[in-house]
Image (cartoon, rainbow, N blue to C red; front, side, top):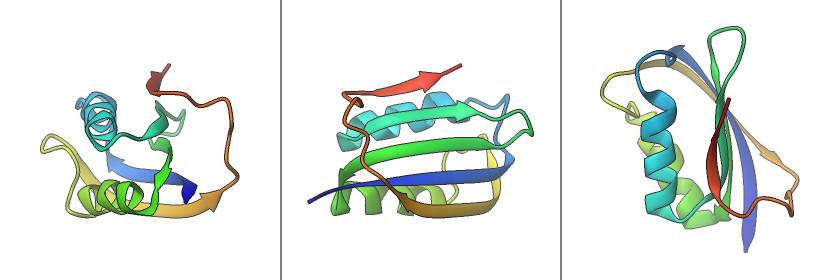
Length: 92
């Protein structure tokens, strides 16, 4: 069953390749969605896939995500499926 989550990540997550490495991880897991920087210095991830794919992404983030980043807080919530998501992208 396909599900979608929205993840809000706080910490040292901008200017350290966080979006690039998250994009690579999402592609490796076969997820669709996007990652983008927020104006307040945080990062937002919207990921859509099956529960195992989603679990692997959240586990990767909970274990610290990219080596260059320093995550201090992660907020994960379910969100409505967006039918127009066909790949995983970095949004600017």
